[in-house]
Amino acid sequence: MSYIQLKNVSKTFRQREQTTKALQHIDLHIEKSKFVSLIGPSGCGKSTLLRMIGGLVKGDEGEVTIGGLSPKEAQKQKQFGFVPQSPALFPWRTVLENMNLPFEVNKKSIQASAKREDPMELLSSVGLGDFAHSYAKELSGGMQQRVGIARAFGSGAPILLMDEPFSALDEITREKISYQLLHIWESHQKTVVFVTHNIREAVLLSDKVVIMSARPGKITKIIDIDLPRPRSADIEESAQFHQYMSEIRGYLRDEWQ
Amino acid sequence: MNGNNRALHDKSGYVERKGTSIVSNINEKAKAPLDVNVPKKPFAKRFKKKYVSSSYWPSLAAFIGLFIIWELCTMMFNINPITLPAPSSVIQEFVSSFSFYISHAWVTLQEAVLGFLLGMSIAIMMGVLMAHSSVLERTLLPIAVLANVTPIMAIAPLFILWFGFGTLPKVLIAAIITFFPMLVNSIMGFRSIDENHYEYMRSLHASKLEIFMKLRFPNSLPYLFSAAKTCVSLSVMGAVVGEWSGATEGLGNVIMMASNYMQTNRMFAAIFMLAIMGITLTNIVRYIEKKVLYWHVSANDWK
Image (spheres, each protein chain N blue to C red):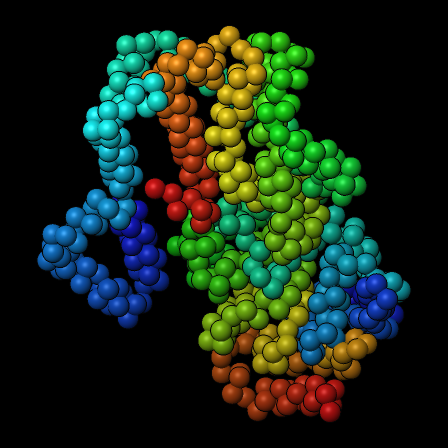
């Protein structure tokens, strides 16, 4: 049963005389409570695709539905927890106040069913329990991004859209946070669409990896990751893990050769 | 000095909270030389740290020095007090007619502050509209620019003609001076929001009003305060210009009258009052800025 459905979706950007075909004939089905990664070279339209699902960008052709709703309607019902590339924490708010932001806007459509999670618990689950009353500038980039992730999980939204949330972080922090995301997701089971250009992250986190190619952006291959859950650090040493990684790398390499 | 200490504690607190033993060891090492070295520092260095680097002492010393040199010059070169009165005679004049100056200063202060508040409110309201609509901006901004480039001295007599010798024309002139910098900065503050913050708000389907209240307005505060710090002293100038053009009271009027009667020490006393007024108003705005913008870098520059 597919939850998020994209049917023959295309998108062209026009800037003055120049037109860029960002996405062409995209068909994609995402099931509920699955972790799906979009991976591909820069310029393949993966961020645009994410924004189309989230109702932030309009498509030219085709249809996007979220549980039968249009992206705008789903957005109105606050179905999305967005994690942008930079953490988007408001500097005049403390960490806790930033966590509360989703509940302060568009109040009419807070779903009665969505039970509000304890923000403190979520913060401690990403190791930031002591920083609830700090301001964003007092936190490192990695800490800020963890707040962004905790905020998305705590917003009551069933769908989380993550746009390369780790791309600004150093490799060591990145590895640590990817495990935290893995664990927090495995205990919440929300639908996640995760844009990345990191193969390791895609395999570690995902149920499904969507490989995309650039200019025009289209889907090259969809790979199901059949690694057992819950996953731990050992899984990265397994042969299966490496097989998935080299398979994805192969498809990406075809792209630039 | 205090500021430095606080920053240091904040930093060490931040490191400590991370909690690993290696980090806190580094922290102790960083602290140790500070504690040991401070008393050992030579007197000159300690003096510099306490009284020169980070306090109001240097500026106070500069003023006192200036007044002493001035006093000495008037004595040594036997300068005619009508040209340049000695500071002591200015102070004497001020003290002997204290209530006279205070009552006139009160008039000018009211005009300046009312004008400042009026100009600021209109500027922010127009800024909200213009930040949201480029059509409105293109329509209204030229008028604002016109009001800004026209010398205020040239408009002032017209305002006296229209609104009489009372408070109103002075308030309006002060408001016009305040208006433009506040307008430009508020438009900039409301517009220059972080693209990521904006997109995040949109992903929650936040309304325009919510985006304004939660994002645009807080974002504009550093811009607004930066303009307000300049404008509040400009508004004093506006009030004085208005009083020159026609008034029966206020410090500007005192200066004009004293000039006619060549009462130079009276002019100086009024000028000092205006200077003190400007400094006080600017510092009040700075103080509010520091309280409101605790989260912003600019608040930390403040001493």
